[in-house]
Structures are given as structure tokens and as C-alpha cells.
Image 1 (cartoon, rainbow, N blue to C red):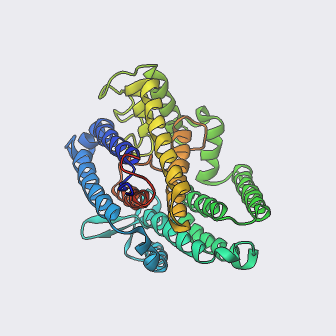
Image 2: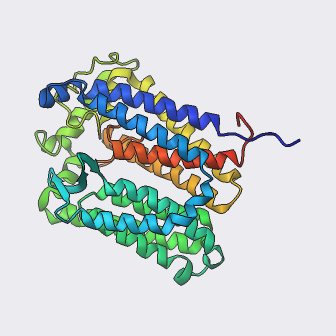
Image 3: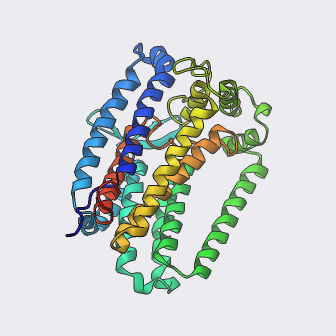
Length: 372
């Protein structure tokens, strides 16, 4: 008799641990900032718990829905993402800190770029499976997806949100590679993209104008502008360095007391390293490695290409965001805003990641026995 199949317990447990760490660290990292701005130290904690509850509920529902049904709405999801990204620049969009990335509806903020990550993974998985016989043709199997990625890239970049626009390109290239495009096409795309990125950075650096130039200069030498563009990098390194091996203890961070901007969001890994030390930071990174590993195993064992590509897309999404976020916190990369998956404060990001995880858990039901 065939053994009953169930969800991947390792992926589920790792996800819950990451979300729990996120709730604890958001409260710890945001307390002073919340008291200073809202007079309520639990301001961000209450919202993070609310979004976590919503996300877990959605993850649970999605883990029970046959993942193949998402193929039927893939093109609709992509169209909605394009519309939302355009609406950001309409009167419905809201500008905060010189960036237009949000739409406020009924007191809640919607971040179209986060919705786009979900839509893009579902659409690419559905379309690439449908057109798998055409993938060896550049015109029919690669170019249409590049045009879609370029369109999304342009809309997100204009907000401006350079890091998320790069994530969109990365996901597209990764899923094209997993789907089986010709290696020569993949290499050309990768080299072309790398060259374009390098040229763009070179232009910014040598043009000598604008905030982007000062930020890139500060990346090369944070102390050249310690009170402005170099402030975040300096304070982040101070937080990480002062944590030592074992950390100062939860709640004992110094840098979160209005020294490090966005301690509960883009730089939450710095607070983790300060309060939990090198060992705590490594534990979090190991959890992310386990998450990516289980998604990869599910992708390899998925019963069809759609399931394989969705799982690979989630693994790639989490992986690239961890690399960028931790790279920024440790000054290995220029300062740019991208959340640490499941941990940084941000309802849209958390819900989208949990929703995708729910779909991948359903895929695992078709591939693994209980406890697999």
C-alpha cells in the first residue's frame, strides 16, 4: 500500500522559527524608535504579530490548495502587478523619503513590488512549463520573458527601488536557467547583465553627481561622509563588531537607540549580531540555508515542471534577499534597502513569503512521505 504523503516538516519548522525570531527581534530592535516616534514601544511588535498571523493563515490555506490551480490565474496575477506598479505613480501612490513604493488602501499600505515577486514566480513557472518545447529558441523561448522582466525592472527602478529591481532580474534568469534554456543563451544573458550593471555603477561613481554617487562613494569609504551616506554602514559595523561571539543579550543593543537608522527593517541583522553575537547570526544564516535546501530538494522531487520552478523561484528569492541584506549590513555591498526574509519588519514582504511557502508546502505533499 502506498505511503500517505504530507508536507515537508523541516521546511515548515524552519519557517516558524524564522518568523518567531523575526517577531522577537523586531520588538527588540524597534522599541526605542517606536517610543520616540509613536510613544508606544510595542508599536511595531503589534503590527508584526498581526501580519505574521495573517501570513500564517494564508500559508496554511495555500498549503491545502492544489498548487496546479495557480497556473490558471498566472497571467492575471502578472497583469495585476503591472497595474499596481503603474498606480504607484498615480495620486493613489504615496511618497516617503523621496521614494514612491506604496499604495494606501483603507489604512493599510500595499507594496506592489512585493506582490510582483509572487506574481512573477507563478507566471514564469506556468508559462515556462507551457512553452518548454520553445526554450531552445531565443526569440520564442527567452526574449518574451526578458521583455517582461525589463518592463517590471523599469517600473520598480523608477520608484526608485534598485535592489528589488535587481531581484526581479535575478529571479527571471534563475527560473529560465532551471527551466532549461540553452547554456549559451544563459551565459550571454548573464554576461550582458553583469556588464550593464558594472557600466551603470561606473557611470554613477564617475559622474560625481547625485545621492547615488555619494552613497557609492560612501560604500568605498564610509568615513568620507560619516554623518550622512556613511552613517548606516558605520553604525551597522559597530553593532556587529560589538556583539562579539555571544552577543550582549536580547534587548541590550546600543545601536538600536536611534544610532542605526531602520534597525527593525533593513539593518535588523546588525541588531541580531549585536544582541546574539556571531553565534546568533550564524544560527540565523544556517536556518536560511536549511530553508533554501528544502526548497531545492522539493524542486528536484516535484512531480512536474511547474512545481519545480515555483520551488526554485522561492529558494532563489529568499537566497538573493539574504545575500543582499546581510551583504549591506556587513558593508560587503553598498547600502540599499531590502528586507531580511521573514525577519525584517514589513507586512507585505512577510505575507508574500509565507504565501509562497504555503504553495511550496503543497508541492511537497505530492513528493514526500509524511515527515519527509
